[in-house]
Image 1 (cartoon, rainbow, N blue to C red):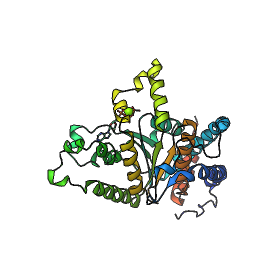
Image 2 (tube, rainbow, N blue to C red):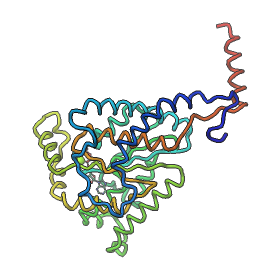
Image 3 (cartoon, rainbow, N blue to C red):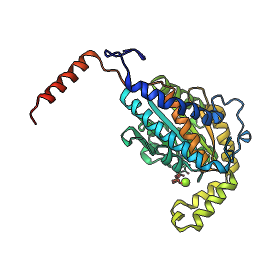
Image 4 (cartoon, rainbow, N blue to C red):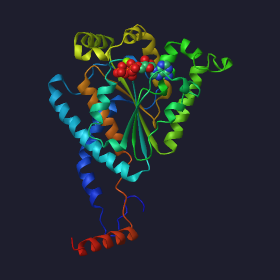
Length: 321
Ligand code: ATP
Ligand code: MG
């Protein structure tokens, strides 16, 4: 049945309720997310984006932002339920960032209210030997969300134009035919990633990409706290320091990545990440807005199904137990 049509009872009760509850939340979500959305990368410059920005909110608004996050998380649970019931669309959320920018915390908090059955997280670290026996998209394709589900990529194929570009020696270990490693390889990767994402979009996956933008100064503060606080020691690895040494090269790679791959259908959100409470509100808002943009409603039950339900009810009420 076409979207918006009335069912045979002449009502769409769940849709009405959902609409009323969510309308305001969705509007507020737009207000948080839109300023950080990059849908056309052509003029993108990282220096226009302040990692310590907190929008219209000051530090004194932190409690209010927690409330906003809780509301967003609740709305997300509702939206995901409808997404799952429809089983047509899927949602792919990609997270990229320097170490200690807060990817894990953002994922944990934003998805905290979502039904685990409708959500899957994949973390991409250095590729395995089996991964390297295939093209670089292979391992990511295997983890794409099914229809009706939200898939989260904690790092992704974008590492192929980030860490691999910063440390070009990695290319040599990718088992690529030597003649394919040319000066054009980065342009080719951007092009292939754009085409891959377009393919996904054309087949019912909505894509939102998050670059959690932390400052060098804040990363230092977080590293120090990981070193000083025993309960956080496990979060620190020597390679974090090594990668910090390539800060400028990473910044350049991130900037170019966003220039080349921000599109209206698969936008990047450049999320200020020096204040975790703000990062989380923006990410939650962007995800709420993305799923809400599908304008989904619970599937409408047709006449045959309604007859089946009525018959089941009759049988149950006639039972003696
Ligand atoms: P956390 O530090 O919070 O546990 P993380 O995502 O930084 O999360 P790590 O195990 O520290 O996880 O790092 C994963 C590493 O794997 C990163 O340095 C990343 O650059 C690297 N990596 C991911 N994909 C690739 C790739 N395709 N080629 C080479 N290295 C990669
Ligand atoms: Mg790490």
